[in-house]
Image 1 (cartoon, one colour):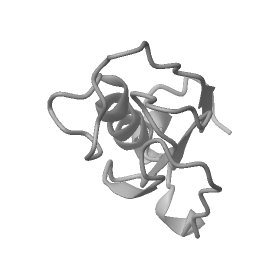
Image 2 (cartoon, helix red, strand yellow):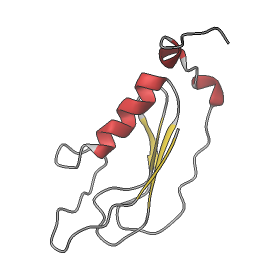
Image 3 (cartoon, rainbow, N blue to C red):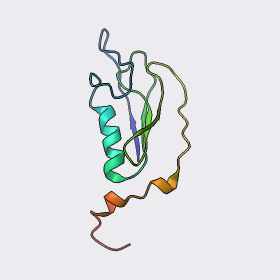
Image 4 (tube, one colour):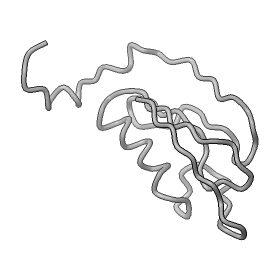
Length: 99
């Protein structure tokens, strides 16, 4: 799954330092949850803006964090994906017709 988004920080707003810190917005925890509940890789891509409250990240199909960009630093996030790990098993339980 690919999730592009833009979060522009308000002056003086909270500045996160660690991914999925309890003080951060729910968005980062949702990335991990979406990956796990669909048994797929989930890439959430944010614009690089000064003081942004979120960042770009990739979650593995088991709901763990694979990698993320440091907050407030421009750059490109690259990730090697083991596509065999993305079984889609949990998402397939909702399928109503055979493939």
